[in-house]
Image 1 (cartoon, rainbow, N blue to C red):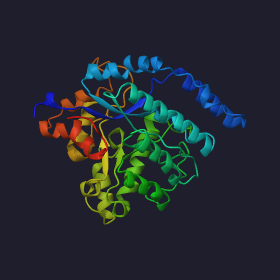
Image 2: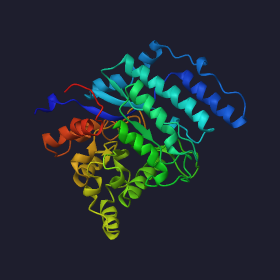
Image 3: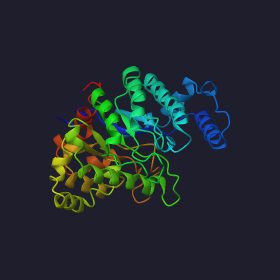
Image 4: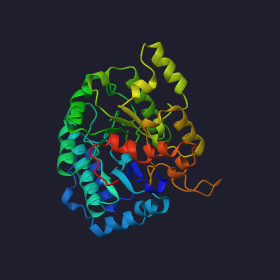
Length: 342
């Protein structure tokens, strides 16, 4: 297969250029939750189709064209999920508003975007309560997956580990619908951590460690979880995690990951992608850029964008067949509801 025949599927994109009135709505909602006053109405939101088109054409779609990617699996701004704000009712209102906005993006540009939903999680609220919104998004809006927050507290990590049976009712719904989840925290309210620089990567690493010491995939053999940002610290410390797994009488890491755990390529330099693709099984890596997201701008040493991850994958020594898996094949395997032509 020639590389030009590939469908380049970016599995990790957020709507970070959303209309300004959404920010007004969320700010008012957050203030009302804090002050215990009346919430702003969803009907007050003013987001025209033209405004949405302009925001996407000037940003994500332009970059898709410039960088040679075809379709982005698209979800609401991750740092904006803010599950620690207000209560479950506030989270549901925010979540449905954001998911419906993603549906509008997909409807306007069906060749460019495929929907993934955020969930109405809230501290202390059982994850199973989010199953109804997941089902709505999958069955009614045609979404192909979700973003699952392992820490709704926003940086205080007081929820049970992802391997606890507290999460099982939600996993049951994922399996029933045959959709994966990207394990993705939101904005951090703990001043000890930077949201994208430390909190995200810490949560990624934490989730992996929980999973490799558990029997969750024995209980849910078809459960599929994507750990973003290249798997956090895992590739660099592969020997440590492998040793810890073996010391705890667990299988080899590639056997644990198998058809259940996947990493993406949101790693913003060539040596990082080289390491990722050398130590992590190629069958468990999905192409992603998270643009326009965590790291904006150009690398002054190269003059090229940090988040243009396609060129890093192109720059590896992988075979054409292995690059095809990363760019397209693995995404089709993980997102089984994905309906894009070859």
